[in-house]
Length: 127
Image (cartoon, rainbow, N blue to C red; front, top):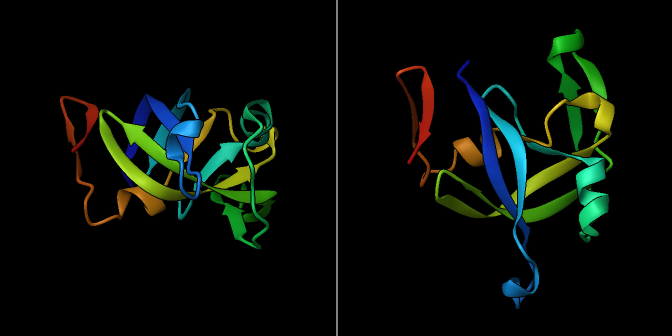
């Protein structure tokens, strides 16, 4: 598993037609290609008053023996890391106690065919 350093991640909720209505928000996050989904803390979503949609997504926290984690809701957002932007990334909103960083960038971002990443001098690079 390749897990990246804490990065500044720009997240912007995707509007159906007028995307520029939503301002980008800088949050701290980690890239974890062992995570099947991207997740975002509940407090970030509530603070930004982002709209959500109800989807049932099953998440498991393998740090704690594979225990289920409640995905509160799902939102769709543009995610930008190191000037690499991917639109319409699904982010599962999780309770704040589940993760220490604002966002965990998982395989719904890293496995997109337009994204490449590698480690150089102990730093994760995304292209």
